[in-house]
Amino acid sequence: MSDGAAGDAVVVRAPAKLNVHLGVGPPREDGFHGLATVYFAVSLHDTVTARPGEGLTLRLTGEGTGVAGGPGQVPADRTNLVWRAAELLAGAAGVRPDAELHVAKSIPVAAGLAGGSADAAATLVALDALWGTRAAREDLLGLAARLGSDVPFGLVGGVALGTGRGEQVTPVLAAGRWHWVLGIAGEGLSTPAVYGELDRLRAGGRVPDVAEPTPAGPVLAALRSGTAADLATALSNDLQPAALSLRPDLRRALRAAQDAGALAALVSGSGPTVAALAPDEQGAVRLAAELAGVGVFRTVRAVTGPVPGARVLP
Image: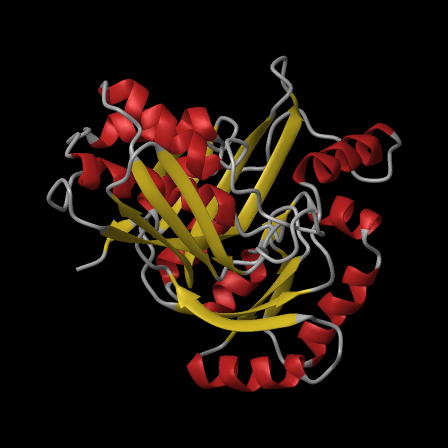
């Protein structure tokens, strides 16, 4: 996986992800939920830069890095997945964790877009190159799985099927390129809280209970067909009812996307981002302009995908 000379500054782009299908099973004995999900990497990126240093330092700029302790504030200490990724790779490779790390964030925090996981994946790639550790792809994927369920997909990118708790990632053939508009509505949602709310809704009979995650077959077939219309009919997210229960205002956000001409709209992952599928690039531009003016979303971004996972930039 190394792609740069040890000692040089290394820059890696970390893409956000959507879940175009998210089937959630019951809680497992380890506390996680079994998943059948289809990850989709899009052209909204954070950037991780690694430089030689004495000890480990982390600097954060951009989205979610404002007033310390404020809502959605990203920590710049050992609790950050980036820091943990650096220490994990150093331990596995038997090298000192010496590096200056800078994360320039554009992916909104706690938005269901896996920005923190993407940053951790990018850190593994950047430091593998900086330190010259030459870790095998499978070794990096194993380290990524120890960091979090979404981190392995940050290495793989493109479109992939995620099973287990999401960490078992298999690339998927996708025949086309799709255009999305992302609308971030209000403050972030806690992923554990959304999963807990889904369990509560299922226990109370408010949404159907399941013994296994819903299979991803319809979405995989739509991705092979390459048409936005087919994909629009197949999008699915079992966490959406829980996100709507915790944040009823998201119903208005979904309606706004559909009223503005989206082929389909769903909550991305655990929310609160609404992902609206556009028919084409021009449709995405019109949709983004319309949604930016309705006063429902604090941030609107037009993106495309699939895009590659974490890669060292030239």
